Length: 211
Image 1: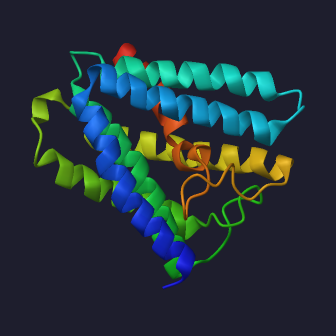
Image 2 (image 1 turned 60 degrees about the horizontal axis):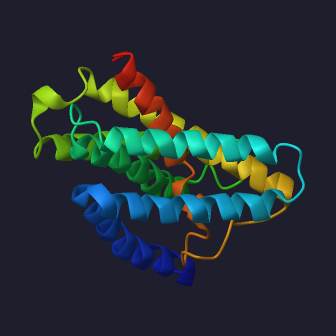
């Protein structure tokens, strides 16, 4: 097991419980936690894009994305566990993609992100669905989206797309990571790249009752 993988695992073991604590706690602690994440993400985007003409669009998108994150968490009709549900999909997609990609390798998914493979994409879907099955054993089925598996596949796809889009901008900026704040992961934006796309799409799905 290489050193970077060890750092990645240890960071996840520490960060995931802390994040879930603030998500479940809600109210002011959650607002403070998300505000810190937002400002770090904005700062990393600012440093990475420098004087690029598209920088402003990133700012606008991040504001909208974090607004939907706040709205989903504080929507009483959804409950905080729906927020956790979406977060688990994104985390499972990331872990599944990383593990399956390392184990099975195979054809590259895109030139924008050379570490992304088709096997990793499939692994992201598989682990997301498995996580769904495990998660639903501890929740009330009537409160979940009507078609759970379809929802998981859509959000997993959006999460993977978000990862690729951020990788594209990193490639344009000629950087490997958006920062160094999280050992084994890079920056905050590296860690939440899939989530900042998944939550706005989830918000639209719930808003318009699409699924």
